Image (cartoon, rainbow, N blue to C red; front, side, top):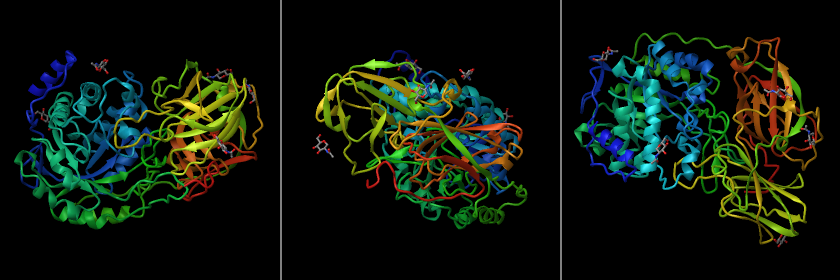
Length: 629
Ligand SMILES: *[C@@H]1O[C@H](CO)[C@@H](O)[C@H](O)[C@H]1NC(C)=O
Ligand SMILES: *[C@@H]1O[C@H](CO)[C@@H](O)[C@H](O)[C@H]1NC(C)=O
Ligand SMILES: *[C@@H]1O[C@H](CO)[C@@H](O)[C@H](O)[C@H]1NC(C)=O
Ligand SMILES: *[C@@H]1O[C@H](CO)[C@@H](O)[C@H](O)[C@H]1NC(C)=O
Ligand SMILES: *[C@@H]1O[C@H](CO)[C@@H](O)[C@H](O)[C@H]1NC(C)=O
């Protein structure tokens, strides 16, 4: 607490943060503690064995939270671990949103109502295959910002975030009789650094925002020392608890960091990434590992118990070349993306049942529904719905234009002739750039390919050059220089172009297509990005019985809204071929469900969609970059 006050005082004067190393004192509570160098957590005086699994509420429809938690309990789990996505809680700086999937109070209430406990993983940086590890994109243009570091602007924004979360979840802390037992400091920080001033500042901020709960750090075995904080329990993560758990005592000798042995992330399998040659990872059975952990009297959390979905634009990526993660975050998890048990669920349950009695029965879940094929009609161009223009002589980034996710359109009116190859910004494109002249698609540049084709254009005075740039997902490692859009200048045949109009498309909500008077527009193979619209009737009760996989054959790449919900990106290249459409978001059987599909690279021909009751994974060549690799 002393340190927290020092930090606050320093912040108030906007001075450089100087913190005493290891000044942090661990919070204690009479409710939840651990005994150094022993097996047990102690909750209300009794030993407590953490049999955990990860569910991130922000990847799950709120309507289904209680069902997902019940499925965890019915597998024998007693503790839900959750990352929080700062980037969704404060999408725009200073604009806090704790509604719908960001309604953390309701999330922890649902856990408490189920008689379960919780572990808080607020970051600020969390990995989790999220865009920038869930850091808000606007951090990228704050002067002097250094992410994941003992840096005044970063710590100021982070502690402000902790305080906002703290206000909401205060009643749910174990110190106030709630389910939240402890909180993790940063995430796998030992991979990238060991700065005790940074770690201490985070712990102090947490001690103030989430008072009375214990702290822990979570790292790979060889990173544990670098990531650890005196007074906080040091635990491991990774895919092999049999190898990892025994290394905890070898790595950590400070008794203030010792306690029950735990694998904070037993990885089930792995995530998927978009690419014509990238397959789906599938499920794996970790029941043998779990049985072993429990037989040792040790503790674990499954990563993921339930992965869920990157709704909208939440996915992250990796670099060199850019590898964006898919909309589905199924993760081969024990509970699949739709909340139904994967093939491994029963094996896991049986493994836990060897060590735990009175596991509740598994509730039955309805099958997914099929929806017959329905027609989607092209009704408007994406660029018919331009927001207010932002003008400058050289291109500005997406963040400098006031947003962080989605697309940004750059428009240049040629005042002289120019022809030849188009060069957009410095380094690799950020990230996928569709080039149009007078509304006709000329080609696509994309950072996902190492060998990108050249796109040539020919402009004469009066022509309009358009560059539609998509943020495919910031690198998940949380390093700096992740701003999106165009960084640098644009040239054609070596001639730099000046004078740009900018239009952002964050798609926080769908455009009002009915404000367009066009009933149907024509689409050619080189048309500009186009909205398609269709409706279907749901024959089921609007709940899990109406869940379906939305299949969009013949569409290339874009995003989908159903009844105003942004289901996320689809991309024919795969491996994900369908989008999870939660039945809870559909209307009663009498109502029409509205499906809006944006195709960024539309082609001629009719379009249909349908709902499938079973999922298909697979790959197709990229029609926009056929021979790219
Ligand atoms: C600290 O954060 C607050 C809230 O985000 C912001 O209004 C303020 O400008 C920041 N101050 C500094 C010095 O970064
Ligand atoms: C936790 O401890 C506090 C303070 O001793 C007490 O008021 C509260 O009721 C306890 N919570 C539970 C769940 O026992
Ligand atoms: C594209 O333009 C470059 C000059 O910028 C030229 O060297 C190249 O031959 C052109 N390619 C085609 C296919 O026209
Ligand atoms: C959409 O546009 C139509 C036609 O201009 C208008 O009547 C309607 O109110 C708009 N809806 C919304 C939600 O703005
Ligand atoms: C109708 O479609 C044309 C061609 O795509 C477009 O130029 C025009 O802006 C559209 N009208 C409205 C009202 O959206």
